[in-house]
Length: 123
Image (cartoon, rainbow, N blue to C red; front, side):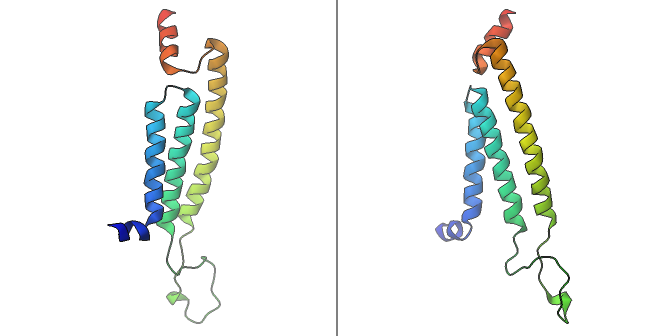
């Protein structure tokens, strides 16, 4: 088991990030900490896509100058493209989330979820 973790340390890091992000989203009452947890969760998913796309001994998918191009082992660029797009969407999601958090704080004066529920129940 230890040898498996030593050879696949990236997956162990991935699941640690995934767990920490999920824990932050579920356990914290602060909205900013919840947003940070969502970002950690997203980062773990990005790491997963990149780790799955890794090809041992692979090269960039360009036209080779060799006589036997069919024997060349190449890595697929599709997961990297998907991750790049997801990073842009994640940044936009974070920006909108922070804008909403600022608006909530200016309206209610708190960022704690339980306090916000009490205030909304009183209205």
